[in-house]
Amino acid sequence: DNTTVAGTHLNISRILSDLQKHDKSLEHALSAVGLIASKVFTAEQYHQAGIGEPVAEVSEDDYAALAVAYERAAAQQIALKQWDQAAMAFKRSHEIALRVFGRDHPISAGIDRSLSSVLVRTRARGLKSEGENDGTRYKSGPQ
Image (tube, rainbow, N blue to C red; front, top):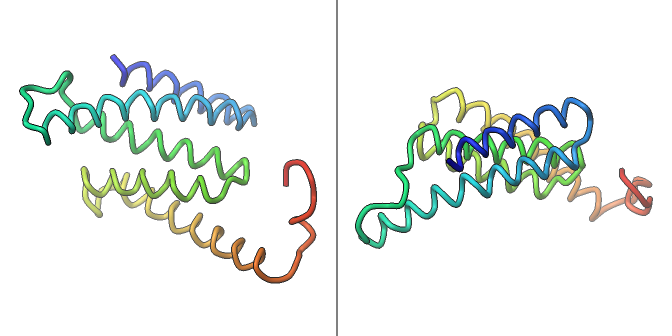
């Protein structure tokens, strides 16, 4: 089952993150996103098209796993200073959590806080790049 395999990728991602191997951790988080998203979106397409029964039933746990997978990817993108990608991943995670769980659910609230934080950082970074050079803009390698 894709969700089970995705859960394994998320566990590996967590371990690699703890070991400060954020690039590898991100790869596993994105693998989890791909596996769960293919299941969720295939089922939604069947439903929207009215074509019989979907290939697989999609549960609330599947949606929760997809939201967590996007959140895990975003956390690794933050560690890698990929601010714009992190903001997009948090937005996707947040949209899924709100749709499935509502605004007051702990998963939604936690993702909302993370999204707000990364958006503030992304906006601040955008203002710096348009204004003065703080020295980091022209450095090569990881910032």
